Length: 105
Image (tube, rainbow, N blue to C red; front, side, top):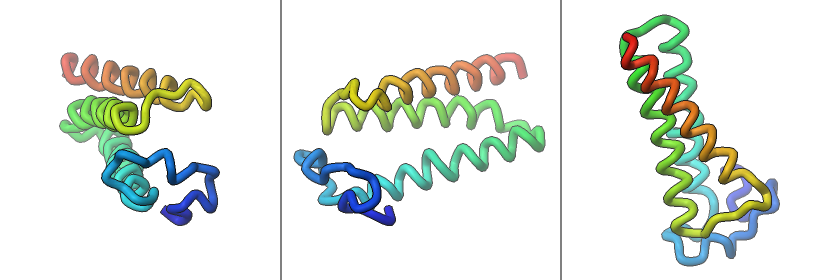
């Protein structure tokens, strides 16, 4: 969000062609809120032992998978750098942990 035109991270704005975004500010805001702050709130809830933590852990994994699916649909799949495959595995792992925890609780 601080460098929406690729000033900080070398992300070409041209990669957003065909998307509804002209720069990285809005996608960065969504990432920050939904996949940054959201999981921190879920982690705090899990730490405190609140009853909704398993469901929100599962939802965090699903949210990450949805984000990556939309990203791949808009800008395509990339092995270099391997961030998309890593995030797919992370989303599946987080979702599986949440679902298993949910079923046991």
